[in-house]
Amino acid sequence: MISLRPTRPLRFGEFVALMALMMSSVAFSIDAMLPALPDIGAALSPDAPGRAQLVVTSFVLGLGVGTLFFGPVSDAFGRKSVLLAGLAIFILGAALALQATTIDGLLAARVLQGVGAAAPRVVATAMVRDLYEGRRMARVMSIIMTLFVLVPALAPMIGAGIIWLANWQAIFLAFVGFGLLSGLWLTLRQPETLPPENRRSLAPRGLARALWQIITNRAVMIYVAALSFAFAPLYLWLSNLPMIFDDVFDRAAQFPFWFAATALIAGSASILNARLVMHLGMRRIATVAFACQLGLALLYLLALQAGLPAIWEFALFFVFMSSAFLAIGLTFGNLNALAMQPLGHMAGIGASTVQAVSTVAAVGIAVPMSLAYDGTQFALVSGVILCSACALGLMLLSLRLPEG
Picture 1 (cartoon, rainbow, N blue to C red):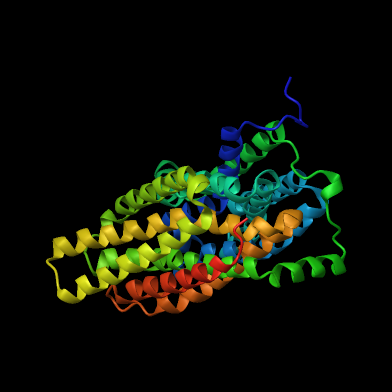
Picture 2 (cartoon, helix red, strand yellow; picture 1 turned 90 degrees about the vertical axis):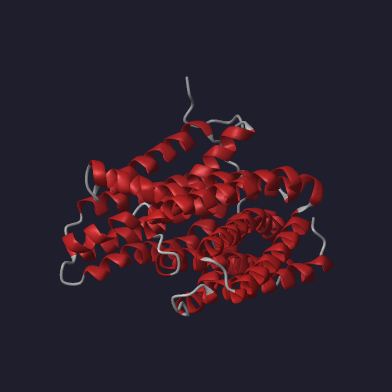
C-alpha cells in the first residue's frame, strides 16, 4: 500500500523529474496561452481585443506576489504542505478561468492562478537546497533545467493542439490536470524535506532579520545581480525573436520550429553542465560561458556591419541565437546554486528573495532594450553584449569570494 505520508527519500532520478515538473508550471501556464490570445480577445473583449495580452501579465502579477509569500511560509510550516496549498490555489485559478465569461473575470482568475504557481516555483527550489548544496545542487539544478527549457518550446504547440481539438477554454482544463498530477505525485511519493527543528518563525522581526542577512550578504547579492543579467537576455530574446523572424528574415511561420531547435540546444547545455560542474566548479563554468557569449556577440555584430547574403546572415543568426541559449543552460543552474549556497538555514525565504529580485531586475533591464526594437537586430545584439559584459564583470568580481 502506498502511504500518504511517505518517509523514504525518492531516488535521484524521480526526485529530479518531480522538481522539474513543479518548476515547469510557470512556463507551461504562460506559453501554452500564447496561441489562444487572438481567440480570447475576439470572444471576451471584441471591442478591445488587445486586452487579451493581459492574460499573460496578470498571471505574472500573481506570480510576483506569490513568490514573496510562499518561501517564508514554507520555512515556517514545511515544504510539502505549503507546496500542496499552492497547487490547490493554482488549480482553483485555472478552474475559475475555465468558467470565466468576461475578460475581467478571466484576468482575476489568472492572477489567482499565478499566485498558486509561485509555490512550485519557489518551494521546489527550497526542497532542492534542503537536500543538496554546492556543486551537487548545481548538478541537480542543471538536470532540472534540461527538462525545464523544453517547456517554452513545446507549450505553444501544445496550446495550439488543444485549441485545434477543442477550444481555448480547454487549455485551462489542461492546467487543472497538470496541477492534479503534480499534487498527486508529490503526496504519494515525496517526503517532507524540512524537519520541524529546522523551521523558522513567521514573526515580523525574524523575517526582517532573515531578509537583512540575505541582502547584506555580499556573495548572495553578487550572484543575484549576475543572475539578473543572465535572465534579462532571455526576456529580450522572447520579446524580439518573433518580430525579427518576421521583419528581418521573413520566416514568421517557421519561428516555432527554429525556437524548438534552440531550446533543445539549451537543454543539451544543461546536461553538459551537470557532467562538468562536479569537476570544474559552478563559478568557472558560468564565467567562461559569459566570456564566450560576449565574444560571440561582438563577432556577430561585426559580421552584420560587413554585410552578408541573406542566407548566410540567417545561418549566423541561428548560431548566435543557439550560443545565447547554450549560455543560459550553462549559467542558470550554477548561479542559482551559488546564490543559495550561504542560505541553507533559510532556504525558503532565500529562494523567494533570490528569484523575486532577479526576476524583477531582469525585467527592468530587458524592457527598455525590448522597446528599442527598430525592425533590425541591433537592439537585441547590443542588449546581449551589455548584459554579458555586466554578468562577466560580476563573475570576475566573485573570484575574490570562496565558492563553497
